[in-house]
Image: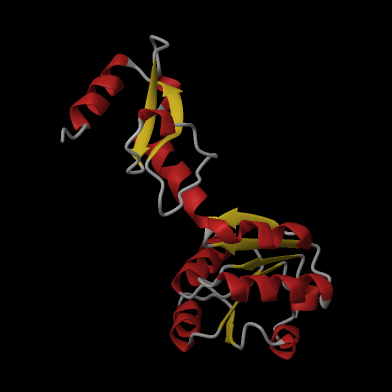
Length: 194
């Protein structure tokens, strides 16, 4: 089997990714342990196969060794980590992209030589870009977006690492940017008062 891109896992998400790539006429194969996801992928004309994601034999059977790119999109970081290790060490896939669902697990993927995409960061970035058009600023003013971490002291307020959304995140600067007057007015009207 000659597959340029192998999408491993992810259920509905992996299936949709495979479908979009297939619609763009890219050579793609979807493998998942969900019978439903595989059936729906096939119904959409996407080559798909049900298999155990962390089994070297299953990955070999679906042609992992022939893939130029593999994308591990399971909703479990532990599965994505093992799949990435197998794809790198056993199948020598040249390009591996891995979904990291929990930002706290990002460091675990660093030494593998894979491209990791943090779900929380991607969603937050997309949300901020959609909500606030930073390029539309005409007057050069800035707005600081904050979340409250329950700290009692104003001195506890300091910038967070970019997109560091731990469970205790509040009163940390999430982003700053320039906004047009009309956008600032909409942001100000949207603030809640306690």
